[in-house]
Image 1 (cartoon, rainbow over the protein chains, first blue to last red):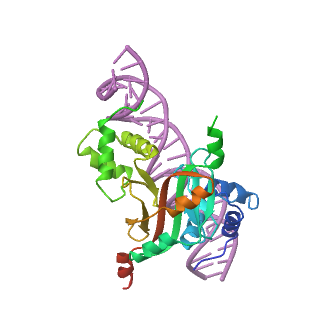
Image 2: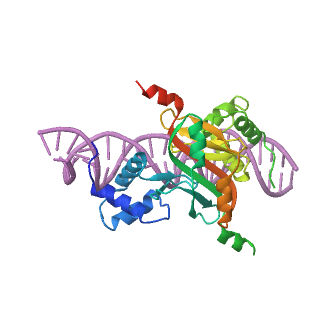
Image 3: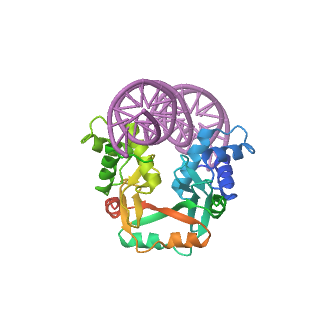
Length: 127
Length: 127
DNA sequence: ATATGTGCAAACTGTTTGCACACGA
DNA sequence: TCGTGTGCAAACAGTTTGCACATAT
């Protein structure tokens, strides 16, 4: 059975109190402020556990890192290729998951990523 | 300037003639049937180049591998956590990219992934 | 008591990269 | 010729894992 752990709670806290889609290492640094001797391995183990439980989503934008997201409302991710920032874009309904359900699948989590250039970087480009 | 290469064409061919969302290594094995002494490094370099050009899409489903997709029609990916299979689901319009454009971004490629259990594995589970 | 979680560090592995050579334009 | 691409192999880096100890139930 699943056992409580201070470490896992702290990790979940960090993920739910940011919208920056952090990497494992960023979470590690942040949690160390509270639990200084937590290990990176523990962070990885718990991120992976939380992700399997569906309490957290993992997002791969293609920058070589796994990003984690504690935002449980329906949204898409916009990844800017220039500055690397990931921005949430709220969605009203999950019509992709619906389309998929019609194909005989049972979806349980959705990760939507759109890549491109953000407004800020678009502006800068006009130099 | 971009130079023609037999290797890159062969890699693109492989990707466009399958719907299995292969990994770099699978592509490597496949291309070696035609170009036996191609190197894995070359495959990686070209996959990454093709991906930047937008001729190919890279899909991270969270199994530890990067998957590549030469299908250029609009579709979502369903990843089955049980059997690992990735299935394309055609979409009529890219309303997510639209939603994102309204937020001031300039999207250029979309990767939609829904995770869950596929019909086959659902059936098997009823034992 | 005991099964699960942790810290530590080493191991793993998919991917990247430097270099000398080959090749397309 | 000249700049880009390739093959090879070593290096890299994010992530995983084994082990002995700690902790929740």
